[in-house]
Amino acid sequence: LTLLSGGEKSMVAIAFIIAIFMYKPSPFTFLDEIEAALDETNIKKLINKLKEFTDRSQFILITHNKETMRRSDTLYGVTMNKELGESKLISVSI
Image 1 (cartoon, helix red, strand yellow):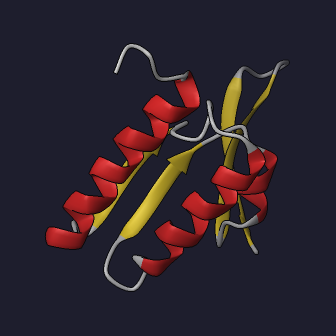
Image 2 (tube, one colour):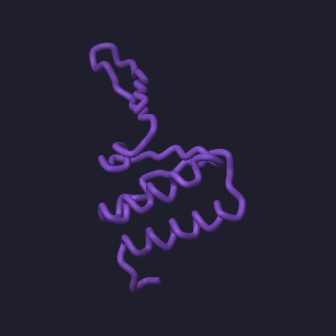
């Protein structure tokens, strides 16, 4: 495993997670920047695979990737008014 690149290590971990979901899907799952080390082609493959599980499970992805955000159903963001110092949640259905 030490000879694998960062993207290859990510793909192995993602494949393991997806194999677990195929065996026993959970109602919802948090995934934090799992696509950070992937190229755009593999990100599209990952999102397509996650979409296959959306009838059985809900995924909450924390990401900065534009392609992941573009292909999501709903986006949530947090913004803060610097003058008041209060945070505000913003949601967008796509």
